[in-house]
Amino acid sequence: MAKHIGIVSVSYEGTALCYQTICAEAPLVMGEYQHPQITIHSFPLADYIRFLSSRLDWEGVAGLLLESAEKVARAGADFAVCPANTAHEAFKFMTPRSPIPWLHIVEVVADAAMARGQSRLGILGTKFLMEGNVYREVLSGRGIEAVIPNDGDRERINTFIFEELVKGILKTSTKEYFRKVALELADRGCDAVVMGCTEIPLILSQEDTEVPLLDSTRLLARAALKESLGERIGVGR
Image 1 (cartoon, rainbow, N blue to C red):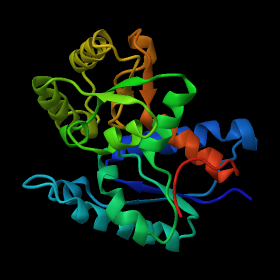
Image 2 (cartoon, helix red, strand yellow):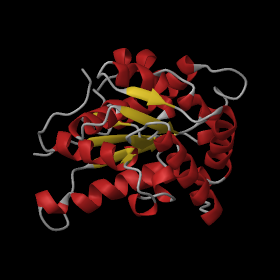
Image 3 (cartoon, helix red, strand yellow):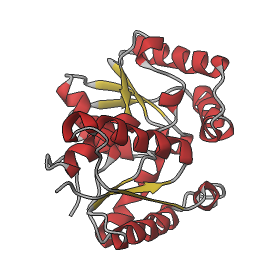
Image 4 (cartoon, rainbow, N blue to C red):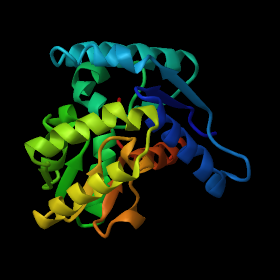
C-alpha cells in the first residue's frame, strides 16, 4: 500500500503545483486515476511572513511547520513535504520534534544535481533563501558550490516573488528578468540554476532558456511519489 503523503503548505501556488505533479504522474506507475492519499494543511502565508518581516525568527517558522505536521499526521500522513524552499531554513528547529519524517527539498535538489554531474549551482529564490545557509550547507556537503545573484538582483527577485508569483501573477517581463539572471549565473560558471522558489517554475521553464534548470517543486513532488511507493529518498526519522 502506498504511503500517505502530507503536504505542509506555505504558499498556495507552489503547493498547487506540487500536488498537481504528484497526481498527474502517479497514474504512470500506479494505474489510471490512481495516486497516493494526500493531506494538505496550510496556515496563511501572512502567518509566516510575520516571523520574517521584522527579524528572521526561524524558530517561529518552525512552530508553524510543526503544527501543520501534527495535523497531517493526525489525518494519517506517513511523512511530510513542504513545497517552500525558504521554510527549510527552519527545519533544524522543527524536525527533531516532528511526529513524522520529512523529505527535504534541498536534499532532493542536491540529489538531482549530483545525478546530472552538476557542481556549481546558481540559486534563485527569496532574499531569505539566497542569503541564507540551507543551500550552501547541503550543497557543500556534496561538494557542490552555491552561487547567488548580486545584491540588486536579489532585491528585485524577492519583490517579484512576493508581489507577483505567490499571488499567481505571471508577467512576460518578469519571465525575461528571471531568464536574464539565469544567463548571468551561467556566465559566472554555473552549470545549472535552481528554481529555489516553488513558484518560479510557473513562469520559467527549460524551454525558455538554454541554461539547465533544476525545478525544486517538481523534483520534490517526484521524490514524494517515489517515497510513497517504497523508494526511499531524502531525510527524516
